Length: 178
Image (cartoon, rainbow, N blue to C red; front, side, top):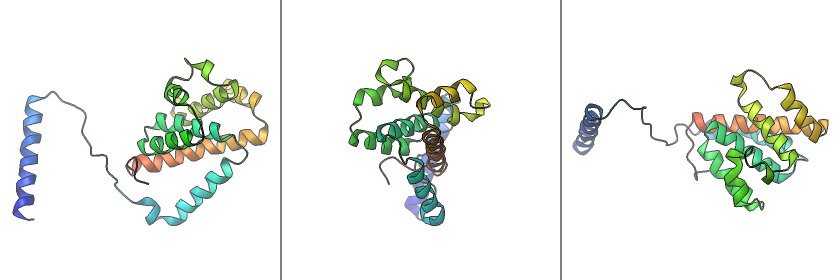
């Protein structure tokens, strides 16, 4: 360790100690930088994920695809995916207002079609499986707006974005660094 590095480390430790003594107990702070280049280390998994995504979104409306990806990424706190899919949604012609309101889509229902609302409800139910299960009412609502094959693709899309989110969050992929 160089003298300069040792001095910087000592200064950081002193600052941390001062903060700990004067501030009330807070949540641990973490630097949000990449932990692991998972796609480079497991290229066969990355390629399989790409293939799954391509297959999952087949025959689904591109705007709906991006709304679903954004909503799942909001729920999963995946900054990398949010950054990417908001940009993709804009490029596909999605309005700023609908993107901004997506986090409160139920209160802004007039901005989303019944089909989009059904897809967003299903996205939330599948993403938040810790709640126990996907309720029949949510599934039935989606089934009323999507044919069986389209619904199967939607479920695959939701599952895929959740997998991407978990890669992004667990490896701390940083927004804007694709």
